[in-house]
Length: 355
Image (cartoon, rainbow, N blue to C red; front, top):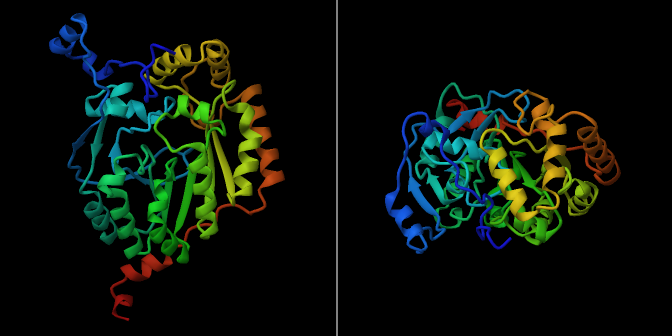
């Protein structure tokens, strides 16, 4: 534990695979500092504004429960060590390890691009989910308020909206969410992977505490904002034993449904996760990695549609069965309601806007 990078999930800086194919990146100054005994890395987060031409992305994967996503930020300071989005940071020229947590790209023009999309005559009002890749309520959102501005656009057009987050900062926007709920145009998915604060700090170091996340579920539910719990990911030998307590607690606070994934470690994630496991939970590392592989055809990485999300085999089936039983026992709601796009379609129609 003494050699870990405090406040970060990834404990390793990994090379960008695409750069390795073309050229080596040398940083002689940092290397000199390290050799000379100086601290070369201050562990600070950097923010860089980017200027995308579009903001709403179509999701082509058939086993992902969303059709369109929107991400105000690329990279995520939350630092969840298992995050599947880490590999996407390589397309921006960064590494999937600590670079993913330290170099955050921000899209300040996202609200304008979003409104342009909603005004498009061919847009049919499909639900747009914020945070299909990285969390839209990560720490910098408190200052920049890009997500809030996007929600103001969604409310203006009464457009169906989904949000996936593990940050209690979402409560700042309770006023907008409550108004969207009046039109049945909002669904919130709170990721909850553990009830142990010790596990949370290791696994997701810069996310909201367990206490605040539970409070978020309760407050949103009390304002008639439908909440789904994302037990994502379930990690064998680390949090798999918490499945029933998590569902029981979330249901008691008003959660209407629960969904889960079994961890998979594609691309650089396998290297990052194994390094983290051997440094933070060395007594569990081998068993955990073997059981993850057992869920994915003998490898920790998995790209097979269907299996990559839920896994297969005895361990994956035990997880699925346990969740099904806990859902049946503790969740008394029929599930998340389908979102309504009729208000948006009426606003979009130039004839109805006359009235």
